[in-house]
Amino acid sequence: MPRFTLQEIATLVGGRLETPKDYRADDAIAQITICSVNTLAEAGAHDLSFLSNPRYKSDLKHTAAAAVLLADDGEASSAACPVIRVADPYLAFATLQRAFHPQPCGRGVRHPAAAIDATAKLADDVDVGANAVIGAGVTIGAGTVIGAGVVIEEGVTIGANCLLHAHVTVAHGCVLGNDVILQAGAVIGSDGFGYAWDGRQHVKIPQVGRVILEDGVEIGANTCIDRGAIGDTVIERGVKLDNLIQIAHNVRIGAFSVMASQAGISGSTTVGKGCQFGGQTGLAGHIKVGDGVKLVAQSGVISDLESGGVYAGTPAMPHRLWLKVSALMMKLPEIWKAQRMAARKQGEK
Image (cartoon, rainbow, N blue to C red):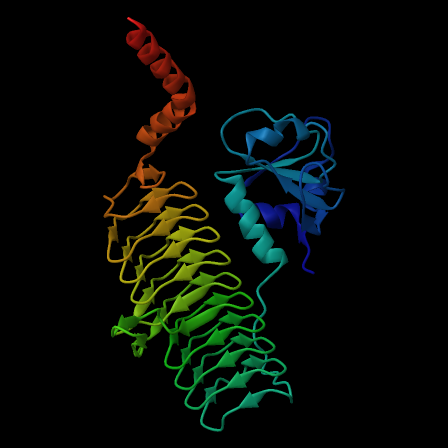
């Protein structure tokens, strides 16, 4: 695992190294070796920690970390160790974790149990794991890693520096850009849920579109993205989807949107750029959600939503209104009891 000095870390995160009074000589502090990042409560002498949530501020005074990332907000530190002042401690933490734990990059290792069609075109440094199957006409870019048991069907295009974890399936004709990550069990390009009723049975409609994942997309474990019925399902660049999410046919999700686990998007719905959806949110089909919309967990959306709003509840409503409705619902039994008593007294007159 990589190791860094405090000075190297400060440079990496664009921070400023500060030391407590009477600690040690500055030169010695700058050369302290850091092996990993840990929580304030559990960090040791060669760990660096961070404070991004005020809830853990009390741990700062007692931490055994070699140094701590703190916001550059002018507030004095109660830590007895050096600190690195940064604009955003959580972002700095993320940067360091990527440095300590870099994503695997292909080196051209091909397991003998992998099945690779003769017409597939793989860059020289693509890794392919055991029991992976790569179909006819597939193209895979430089540095990509294909995990064990992955199935890539015919005609798929995969860009550079992608990471497909074990047992991912990418169905025929789909397109992945550069730097795409697919967690274990994700299914890209399964048939959309399309049927027509003929009076006796549901007649399957062939799903002939594709799924396109643009650069920097990450798809969580066991998440399913259906191919378009006609035309494509498109996940724009930088989108991050959690585990166990369902994206139906012909959906478009705007760049840099994020969705938490168990969200479900029905067919032909368009989600704007930079949206944030909580867990178990559900969207009806053929609606449009504007840019920057935030949905509280378990929201149910049945109609278009304007850009920039925060919504909650089912059907989804502005968050402030939902808070009032929720408070009123808690009082309904009391209100109902009062109404019945009033009606009884009225009837006695």
